[in-house]
Length: 147
Image 1 (cartoon, rainbow, N blue to C red):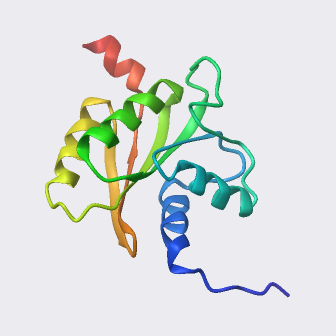
Image 2: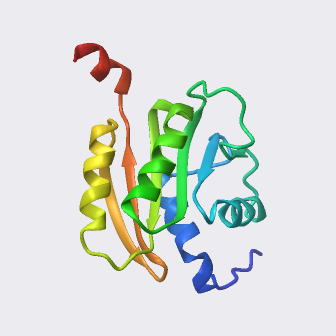
């Protein structure tokens, strides 16, 4: 019989990111941000093994289907993390970003940046650590060819 352990508050954002991106062991995942190593360790502890960080990856070949960003709290640092992982993401990738800043306009700034990069925001969930935004990029190559 399976026993369920209570999720500590510090891990609530991980559960939110996993559910919003529908992350499973079959997905190749790239992780970025100041808390990227912490997120990496938390995901490994949950049994996910196809994880990487931009510093450990080789040449970006759009081989990852999920991108996760944690630990960023200003528009400039989130944009830098997005720019860093975007070349690794496939044309139909999902992304989740933890925004831990109380700044109200930050979510709007990130939304416009995501839309410029070909992502469509699907959901935003408030948790103990802040706001987790999830977005999907569907057929980004087709959009670039049409433009």
